[in-house]
Image 1 (cartoon, rainbow, N blue to C red):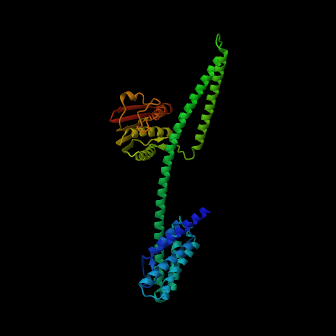
Image 2 (spheres, rainbow, N blue to C red):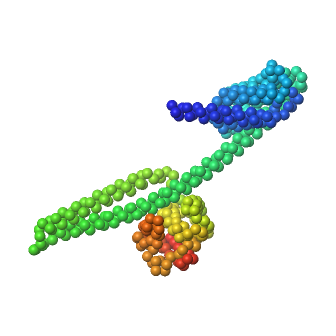
Image 3 (cartoon, rainbow, N blue to C red):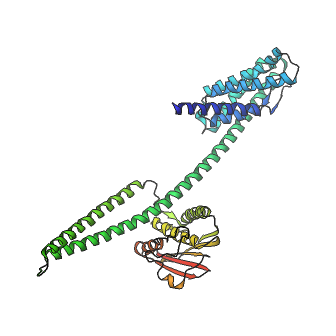
Length: 429
């Protein structure tokens, strides 16, 4: 019920908006026959809005618009001119009849079905305009005092002109909306690719953990078998029996842990839709994704950092999710290394055998003694003074694992304390 009322409220508000805008623009007019007959811009606005707001009734909206215009013009003349009420009714009722006729014709012609057919749409709108104007001209008796050919020619020219302008403006609005929607979809696609890159890199390490679990299970079961076949003397039998049971239970627990991890991996892979995966991506697209996500992160951290992302050749990349995750991790580390102001550069180059990614920053740099251990699990120089907590330091560990084990590449770090750091990643093409 609430949805029904909300929908009705939107429809009514749109109808009122159309009527109001048409009434306002209806005040921009000319008197071609030097009489009460007007040619105004309101029809252009009315036609455009009727095409844009598909949920509103054409006939009802035109009737409401006619009432608005009749009331508005009647009140203006009533308070500013010395007309009798009967004369005012005779002066403005033909305008109301024009809008009712115009709405009936547009509705009967089903103009909304011809949005993608310019010639048909312009013709039907023009015909509705011309015929409605003729009805108004007949009511105002324009044909009795003016040249018929002149009136008809004028109405045809006006009808075709207003219909053409309506279509041109409407098409411009549609094109603009398409561009906006495309930009929004591109942003969502970039966000999805970044999210999936992070998820896939995490899955890489979950699968690695499964291999480690498998190794641990085999080792524990091997120890159990050794205990089972162990010939012992002068050793407490109860102790050995309990130890065998504990080792067997440990093997079972590790096996259950492996199965649970497999279920997690299967679940994550299942919820990541493959339908919008791109088979390939170009370096330019990767740079665009990283540039957008980095700018958002910098803004959220209230830092002022200049970004320079450049590439020599727009190579086509197929296995790109882990690569995006690697570069994103390294760029995030560069952002963390810069206190308030600085610069981060990403330069991509290649030769016949390798592709090179060079990420440099003007951050705090890394001590020479720390360079050899920054990729070790748990190492971190990031300390939160407010909470007293150290960073887990797993980002660079993951980066090194992905580069060396997934891509069979290598990573090199060069740093100068208080001047900055440069990390070069080399991956086989």
